[in-house]
Length: 362
Ligand SMILES: NC(=O)c1ccc[n+]([C@@H]2O[C@H](COP(=O)([O-])OP(=O)(O)OC[C@H]3O[C@@H](n4cnc5c(N)ncnc54)[C@H](OP(=O)(O)O)[C@@H]3O)[C@@H](O)[C@H]2O)c1
Image (cartoon, rainbow, N blue to C red; front, side, top):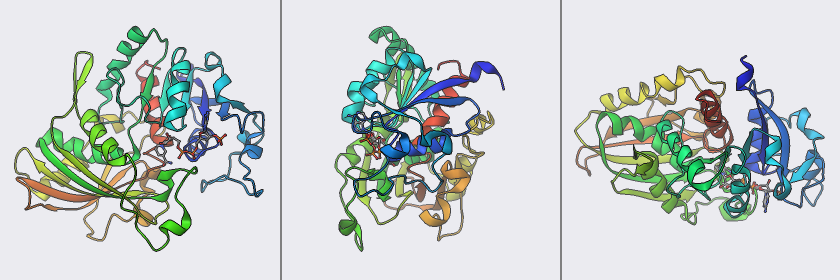
């Protein structure tokens, strides 16, 4: 491996759900070495395994994979005091309020790849999705110039928007998209650990509202699918309508999507465009890249969260039930499944970092 790809990284919010997934993604990573773990002052000064302990003594480790041994005894530092200059790159997995304060401090020195929403809507901040809009990465130069930072903030979109933009991007390119209506059935892990979803609220139930989620999905979808014009992004100027619900599934966001296309296309043409999507990106063979960004299934009973969320390690968006939508002009509808804590959070952010390193931007 070329030594110029090696980076020392910090994971901030390392004790949370997304942070834990980062550690799973980064354990044994060929380029990235985790040099620092950071969280709130509640965890600071403790060994990582100790910081995960809940008040009742149980472990708060929530990944399927065991806690990588190399991190168990590593000391957790206070994110507020993290010396970003001692690493090459920061992965940030804290809630938005904390991110708004912490991420600029780190970005003054090094690139920050974030799962938080704090900076997604700033004019000079790209919301990057591997294979979809990496040309927007050019905006980080504007961030550095205008904010006087050596690094930058590169947030991922919301974990519901990510599957949606991946599935829509080939349609935008091949046929044009004029309108989108999406209803999500989102997994419990998307709500994180604190506050999370109360078991008794969701057992035998569906919760039809997730605060702020629909606005995020609508705005981010237009931004990610927008065009880079000089050093700004012109959002895709179409109506995007989202209804977001929480269902009793652990991982994997399912979305029912109806789109009005710019020209008529058959379900077969749509399936072909999706199946061929982003081969130039997957051919780069980046360490966390799946061999295909979209897999199209023709079994009408798929995709299903339990059966399909782990396709290529949860990095592939699985699409099924592609059919005509007669209620919209040039309408097409389908169901997609995207793994919210893999492509939708830590592993997706790791893949994004790999791309930025590969391009010489981080
Ligand atoms: N869960 C998902 O599927 C998912 C998907 C995409 C994006 N995200 C985003 O990822 C971020 C983290 O989500 P999560 O689900 O992992 O949340 P979480 O499980 O609640 O974890 C929050 C993490 O942030 C730390 N933290 C809290 N307040 C802090 C502060 N003031 N300063 C420094 N660290 C602080 C916590 O440390 P302590 O343990 O010390 O309290 C913990 O490590 C959010 O922005 C979320 O929107 C999550």
